[in-house]
Length: 170
Image (cartoon, rainbow, N blue to C red; front, side, top):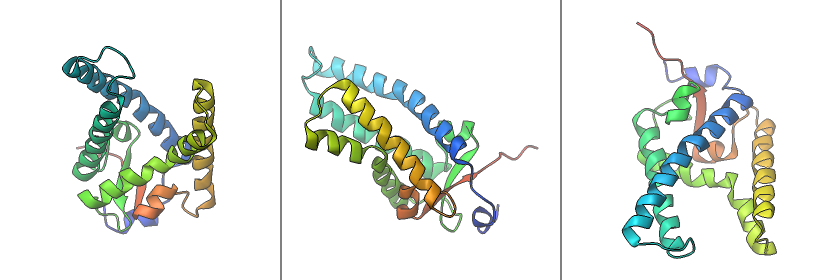
């Protein structure tokens, strides 16, 4: 694939990228569950609120490593491989570790506005938080429709783009 190829063809559709997003969440549920189980065992956690800041930090670091490693090695997470998607920089090259980290941090824009609004408004109910997150994710996804190439805001800001990548068959 040439460096110009990502810009020469339209990117994958919004529905396909959102399907990969949902599938990524399913896969990451297992990662989060396993890390939480190991953390609870190592810290002798007896109550869900005990050590939650440490667990949150550990999960953030594990998820950071997951995305940065996959995006810099192959440009694809496990879900992206399934949906034939790859992340590249604006010129179509593989991501550097710094650009992958920037993309990961900016990808929290999917959730940060909703979580900050819940905090600012004092919303503590599970359904209130879930509703806010759902509305925020839908609004963020719809923002991509305003971009000429239908890119998400975190890709625009980090200088990356998601392309269709079909594996070469012998």
